[in-house]
Image (cartoon, rainbow, N blue to C red; front, side, top):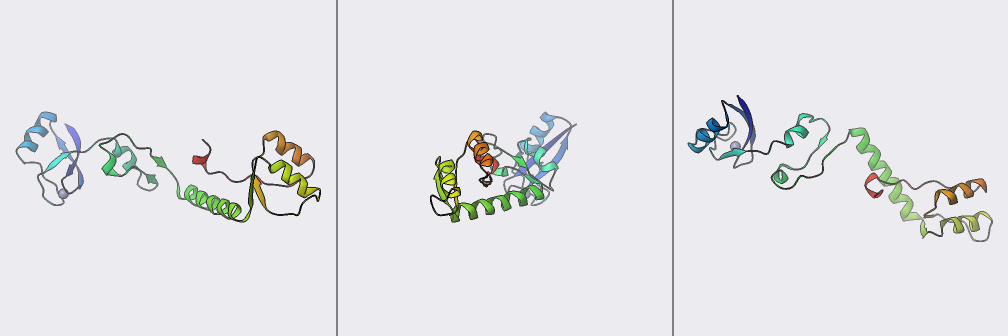
Length: 154
Ligand SMILES: [Zn+2]
């Protein structure tokens, strides 16, 4: 016996057992395999791989079925907590970047000037190497790492 995931021309997916693949081919050719939802006999085998993602409906973020026949799409499983965390992170980040000046690589320099009163205090963000960050901390200059979203790390 072989279990096939089948899909009709209205994109209903369903599963059906056949004695073997030849039996499926024969039955499908003669229009004997029909969709249990709409009765259409225009049925073909669905790509098997999306079944893995469909197993866990509670937290799956899977590629749309339409893409299943093409190249593999990236898929991810995210818990609701993870999604909420990412949303918060993005909000915080958007808020920070909207209300602060991007000083780029000049961040350590600008932060120092502010700390020592050379320039007026304002919100800034930018880049600091691990070495810069350590030095700034040692000088008592307070700053926070800008939250990064995982997909921006590459
Ligand atoms: Zn159907």
